[in-house]
Image 1 (spheres, helix red, strand yellow):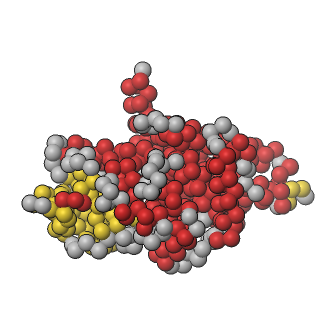
Image 2 (cartoon, rainbow, N blue to C red):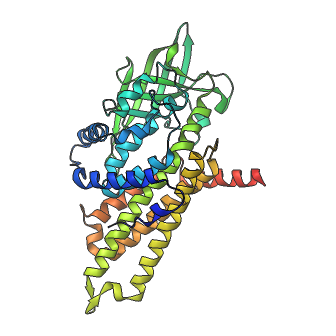
Image 3 (cartoon, rainbow, N blue to C red):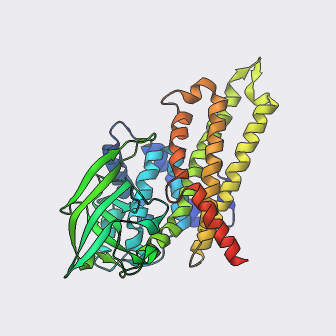
Length: 382
């Protein structure tokens, strides 16, 4: 059983503790799902999460306006990740994909949110390109104004939910200024004419990913999110909210690895005694527990700071994402070591965790990029 003592920390309110308890019970009944057909599994997860109300936290409620609760997002991601990495993926992409609509969308655009919150539509966030990942200002895809329309041309890649999404938030160069100041954001329906799946991408932890092609995709001017040239600000604002939740997912993976390791060393005998009696094993467990708690403190500090009304949490979110994902990788590696041959056996839980964690150190800003972000924030405040 995962340690829940962190829920008593002052970062949380009773509603967060109650949510964690309800979600834990839901996960025990519904997860994991069959991952054999990853597209079908994601559709099933979105449908179930929406049906039972868990996706409500991912987007703006047009009937009861208010900011997104980042602590709820983080608790949900941590809990889902501990049970099933694909469930965490399905939940997270509903939030990231619609984040721009929640924060900057028009009432017409936000009509999509009732569908995504109910699990009746799947969303995607299309920012990365073949030659621009973390370097968003280097975006090459264009959106050319043509009368009352915009025409989108170019490619996006590593797009989560690519090929199964009903709507994409897409960032393209509209040219108001060089670099980051010349980008805009657009709402693109999944069935838009000229939008194609150029390639499905297979990775070590199976998720629906794709390279998308935009061949003269014509959109009405009403598809523009915010104002022309606001794309970079919109993208960074969305990541400012959701970057902490990546750390929360990593935390969920790390907690599961720690739980499995504690069980393993208690049950497995070595040299006539449980592994848990070996001081070196105790040292590994202590290091793992320390990294988990330290990561949790950074993740929930960032979430709490945002929920308390901070306009930006760039420094806090970058620290949380960097530390939690890097340390989760180390925790899971120790878990594999403690499990010996079983730790690398296909289908074993720690083997799957080993594959799941690696991507989190890359997407939504790679670890090295987070160090640059943190350094600039620290030096800029000095």
